[in-house]
Length: 128
Image (cartoon, rainbow, N blue to C red):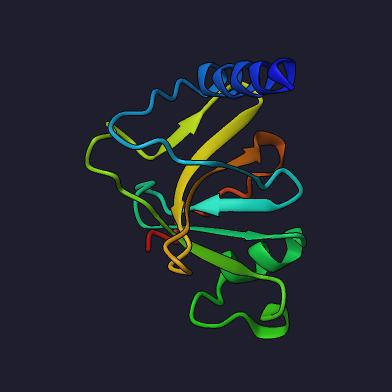
């Protein structure tokens, strides 16, 4: 069992190093969001939207920012958790990005892991 705990700790440290994250004061649990397409606001401090369907984010980003339309059942949003002890809240590594999120559900706050190749970029006109 000791080997399993050691492997867990080593894996967590490797993920932190990959994205350039160093915890300070509070250790946030990791949450695997690699299956989702995702986007964050242009300032990387307000919200993170994610969905198993790329077209859901595209729909919302292109012109429908007031509604989810036909994607209300598969488009999700968390507030970016702006922990004051951290210099930033979105940590981009070569392959994965860690986003500090607050789900506002039962006090859950995570470092959600997203794949960079599933990021949906915000069009320049959509500065919200």
